[in-house]
Image 1 (cartoon, rainbow over the protein chains, first blue to last red):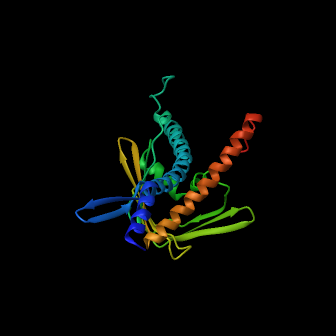
Image 2: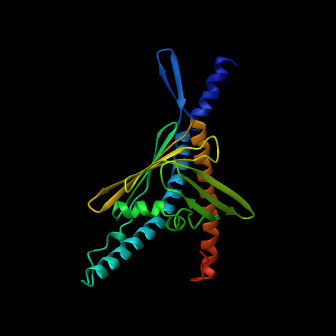
Image 3: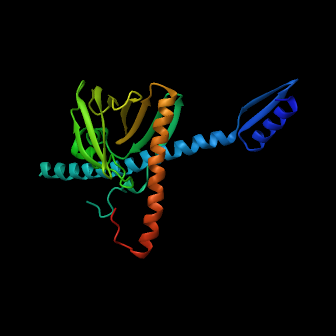
Length: 78
Length: 173
């Protein structure tokens, strides 16, 4: 690939948000861009939702245990 | 007792956070408005565990749940998904009542070691679940799998919500 071709190629990736570039002196450095990060965030968000829905149910179980303990405690005190 | 009770904190939803600590580690946290011994109980008694582990929204049924919660003891969860079945199993490496559980996930070579800690403060419990995978690829795959399952779920939820419009109050959930 020619240098011009490469520049064009990187330009397209940059526009798409897939990479970011930074030029220091004669060297241009490429890094993965924000879009890749966003996909990682989406992945984590789904993962979070899985645990969140589990924990919502766990909340209910724990609340029930709490209520039961209160009632049992009251009975014992009588 | 006062009719209003002691301003039940249940109405306030506790938030679940997820953080990828490193290439191979993921950490999930959540607070519960209950003492640690009750939260711990819900993780270690199969009859309680099976009531919350499978999100209602996922098209999966927990067919059986065996847990021998002591160091070296095993656990086995069997799931049904349509006509197919799958099992998750492993063993407990650490069991410290009301504060710490560590177990292996041995259904695949890429299974994580899961550590759950229960930290009680002012009657509330902070739960921290930490999963350490053997490789970055293993964590990526596990995460994508979970995300896919939830993706499917949300698709189904959309359909369900649409159908509920026509059928209010007769949810099969």
